Each structure stands twice: as C-alpha cells, then as structure tokens.
Amino acid sequence: MRCALLGLLLIACSARSFAAPTARTITFAAADGVTVTADVYAPHPATAPLIVLFHQAGYSRGEYREIAPRLNQLGFNCLAVDQRSGKAVNGVVNATAAVARKLGKPTSYLEAIADMRAAIAMARKDLVRGRLVLWGSSYSSSLVLVLAGDPAIAADAVLAFSPGEYFDDLGKPAGWVASAAQQLRIPTFITSARDEVSSWKAIAQGVDPARLTTFVPTTEGHHGARALWASQPDNEACWKAVSAFLGKLR
Image 1 (cartoon, rainbow, N blue to C red):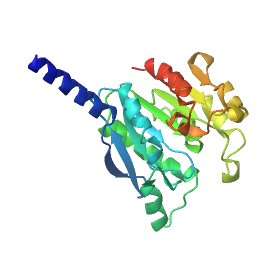
Image 2: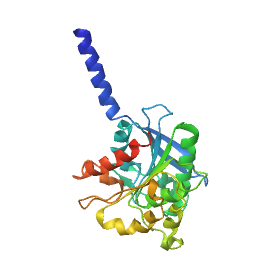
Image 3: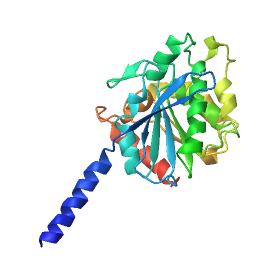
Image 4: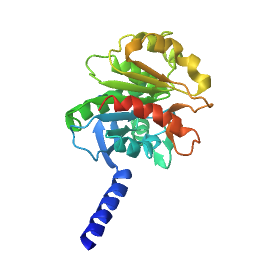
C-alpha cells in the first residue's frame, strides 16, 4: 500500500511539473548581428514536433508564457521568440528589441523577418528532428504565412492568429501576404476576432482549401494569440480548434 501511494505521489508530481515546464532562455544571432532572445519549452525529445512562436506588435516572447506549456501538454516542444519589433508583455521585456535599438537597427515589422529566419534556422539545426510548425500573432502571423511558403524554410504547418495586409506603408504592394499564401502547400490554420475576418478573407482564398482550416469564434473573440489566454472567457473554444488542427500533425 505504501509503495502504491508513493507511486501515485510521484505520478502526480510529475504531472504538475509537466503542466508548467520551466523555460530555458537562449540567444543566437540574426544575419545582421542582432542578438535574438528566445525561450525554449522542450519537455519532449527532439523527435517531437516543435512550434516556433512569434508574438504580436508591441509584445515579447512573454505572450506565450501560459500558451507554450499547454502546447507541451499536446505533445509539442516550443520556441517562443523575441522579434526586434516589440516591447513587453506579461512581465517579459523584449530583449531582442533592446539590442536592436542599442545597435541603431530599424525595428519595423518587416525588419523582424531577420529574427524570424534566424530562429527557424536555429531550431532546424539545434532543437528539432521532427516536424517544424510556424505560429504567428498579428503582424507576425502575416509574416509566417509569407515565410512558410518559402521552400527553403521547409515548414510542415503554419498557424496565423489575426493576419492581415499590414505592410502597405512599409513598401510592400497591396495583397503581398495573399500572394505569398498562394504558395503554401502545407496545413494552414487561420483565426481571428470576428470583426477581423475581412482582413484575412483574401489571404485565405489563396490557400488550397484541402489544406486550410479556419476558425471564427461565435463570440467577439480577440486579436492575436492572446485569444488563448486563460483571462479570456471564451479561450476554450479557440483552444479546441487549435488542438484539433495540431492533433493531425503529431
């Protein structure tokens, strides 16, 4: 009986520690020399699929402090990345943005592509031997749709939370993201708040319907990946849709 109780206790402790794994913070260099900071949530072997998580405007890798552990529970390792276009959220200051500013580097949405490419390359080299999934929030959700269509990236799936054509004033032509999305040949998930659907309708129309999954909440919903935060009363509906999509990738 004592051994059985001890076994149950060990299982319970293991479950609690698995539910909230400790992130390991790492750094690596972008092509222009900016040091990129990211958090690794990797309780699984490198053969497990890995999701590279990119944050929304004004945020940091802290956007994923509670999301990444839940993705771990679904069987995925995660890499939450600070892009140079951002500030802070959930008590986590964007370290990549601080370095870029110190070096006098521009920090527009498009400049963040350098950090995203560096993170994807590093993940391929050092963190994952299985499937690689790209995940973006707001401006970065548009950029992951662009990057995922690049054969050199070799992504296995992509999730975009509130994408849109956010780059007209940065020199990109109208429909830039929609045009890039036509190159996607991988499973693609798109969602947003209800009132944002018109922002990505044209983008979604370019994706092969056989590979496209969309989720529009019955409630108002929320902008970006914060739709999954526990503080959002309707988060479970979004989690259900995300879990169903990811379940097909394992």
